[in-house]
Image 1 (cartoon, rainbow, N blue to C red):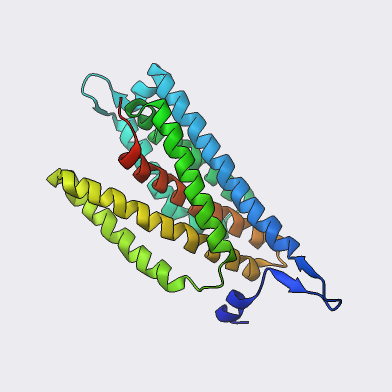
Image 2: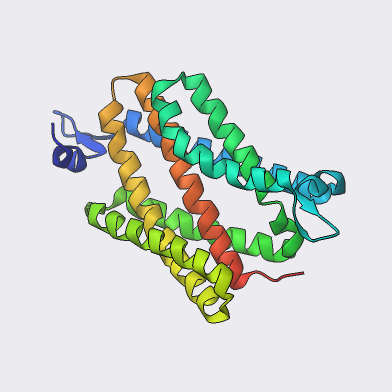
Length: 247
């Protein structure tokens, strides 16, 4: 079966008796994906709050005198990025338990690296933007899951846009352009809105590659959860830049 056949395979199958039933395996697989993602986000939020509300812990990452990051702070900031590149190797070459452990460790490190959000923005605006992000993410996830449109080309276009966004963001670190900052914020929202729909469809299709093999399906679920986790976190951060209220 080629990729196009996988894309056309429906989540609802018609039985000989004419009764439509939901593919229970696919539904459980997607539930697992979103469960992993949800628990990962919860762990990130708890660790971020713990570091932000504990001066001794926050001081390990940020120097209150120079208002800059410590050596440990830089390590915690870049560790999740390194783990992203290593994740696929671990997911498909190491044990399932090791893959799960890496996902939880990644979520915790992300929480520590994002603890500055709780310091920089008011709690009310963080909550408001989180709800906006959750609603947007939920709507695009539903679209990606139910649409019959092939989003592969859109995903390729968005990935190229993401590369451009990263490069422009690095350039703006030195330029300090306010106009570019706001332009990149809106572009970032658009890119991760599109990537959310694309990734959900891609993760759904991966189920058919691993169906029949519980271990592979479980690994796909964790890998898919990481993709959606990153989509949500980035969507939240870009929306926070636009709608958040700084302290």
